[in-house]
Amino acid sequence: MSMKVFDLNCDHDHRFEGWFASAEAFAAQQERKLIECPVCGSHVVRKIPAASRLNLSGVHAPARPERHGEGTAPPADADRAQMNPAQIQALFMKMTRRIMETTEDVGERFAEEARRIHYSEAPQRAIRGSTSQEEAVALRDEGIEVYAIPVPLALKGSLQ
Image (tube, rainbow, N blue to C red; front, side, top):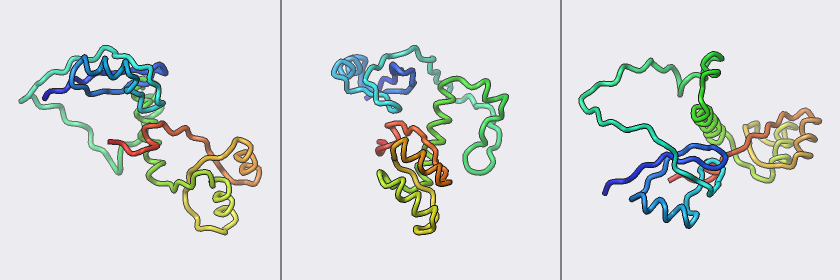
């Protein structure tokens, strides 16, 4: 069975790809609000023009520059100025995934656990969770560094 691949866009201008059995399947799912943006969860989704896909079997792609270390280095300032919204979104998603992989989720206990770590009552480690704006200000006043990072819905649950 061949699949239709559509480039999609939500009402917050997040671009993503969707795979459907047919154009009719896309329309039916869209009508029933079953399609949602993996970044913000919006169900207001539309198809956008896609670049043609060419089968160039036998044609070799040019060599890619060698990568050093884990992942790629962040773009230089001049390169960042040339990034389009899709590239910025991809870089943000990559950064957020890395944060999710390297921190412990303490959920609603964030402020309590941050204080325990700061005052050496708990092991030193990177944590993430949620807290109120007032509590975040109180933590900063105590000399505890906290940063608010919005986590896209696509990264909160398990991806298929």
